[in-house]
Image 1 (spheres, rainbow, N blue to C red):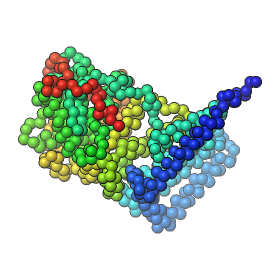
Image 2 (cartoon, rainbow, N blue to C red; image 1 turned 90 degrees about the vertical axis):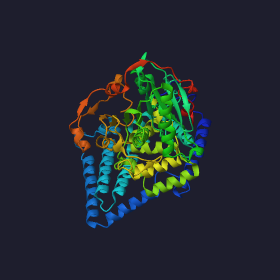
Image 3 (cartoon, helix red, strand yellow; image 1 turned 180 degrees about the horizontal axis):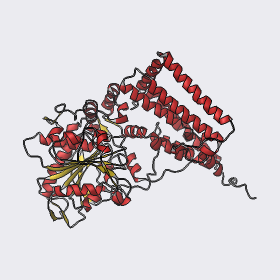
Image 4 (cartoon, rainbow, N blue to C red; image 1 turned 180 degrees about the vertical axis):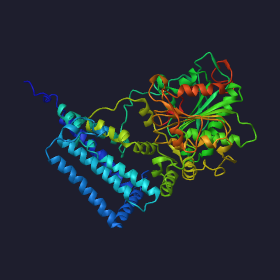
Length: 592
């Protein structure tokens, strides 16, 4: 017997046993979540979000509004007027005004063409705007409290969007009808799977991880590990050109994530690009710390990281001079290394420095500041004293909250409401491959570099018995920042143009922290800005900067070429003193 369109036969219906098993898994996972959250609320389990501090901030916000009756009446009257106008518009029955909403969450036609969904959308946007304005109107909050109130108000507003709920999302309802409910069952499977993966927390899957295997289709550029110590493996890559620059290039990636962001696939690998431009390339691969690394300080990271690697590069190549590169926190460590070398008696061996998304003035660090204050630092210290490190998932969650609609709610809708698998995406696979941070290094970094902004003023910190003063850096530098960087704001990188003593080329790329850096020329996607002079105000610099189309990579290649020295025959990998240990990407990057 034929069935109605969209309906399934009994044979096609999911077995009741399968659903029973799914709900049983869901109950077990849910129980873990409840226990996990209760332990957080009671303070028995660490959370990077300072819930007590957030509650205190909103309590103070409410108290400030109550303390000013006139302002409270004004806020309430504004709320009533907005919603009265909205209801009148909905019930008039006349032609709706022209739709001007640009929010891409509401791009489905039903949000503008169906009066019910249009009213739901407009009510949400109207009241979200009112709530944001109410927070801005509140006086009497410290700057840090105001920033925290804004941030968590935004989190609440975006969490409550009607797009995030099956019954108020027209696309989810349509898909549920078309699949006879299978999309909701698949969404439930995805949700339960993510809860099980998180073992008590929701570990949202942002990408299909199955297609990616390190060394097979990610991080595939040929090379060898030629040195290792307790913190790093040093990879030397096979040359791709017959001639190479005389001076080798050492790159220091971040250790907040793994190094292979620079070597995802051949078509977007900056490592392969550097090789193709004729550089003898060495790249540090950091260990994923365990409890035994708890005492590793920022000094250890400098000594056992770039300083140790510089010696090995010199020994393998026979060159005393080399070029240095760094990305994100690896760039900050590179800056500290340059200042440390400048404070020594010997001439620095570094002939040029490439700094990508590297902050030197952390006075304004953007929204990451809501996670770091004295109370939160104390909580992190207590937690790290027990574990020896900060787990990587805390950082993943923090960075996701900085772009919550893209990195959280987008996947809630796709995975759970629509019942779709997340797409396979190399950058998000790398992003999910989280690393831990050892206690001593993390607390030093947060206390001195984040909270005390120690790089901004000379003499605030010493590393390995030398004062760190960025004004002493005479090394020519190429500094790339990206305009939409939510992790390392470009205005925190720009001050280097006026503080470093040596020649500087500052380039501002389009897009954000990762996409703006991993921007191969063939894609012809994001451009960049340049300017030869550097006024004090970064916004003044941008106003007079020239915009260039295409990737910044060729601009960098032209800049660094003179610093590479003359061309010589391509070098073999390793040496008698440093024979290859294993193939790239090495075992440290595989550490979980």
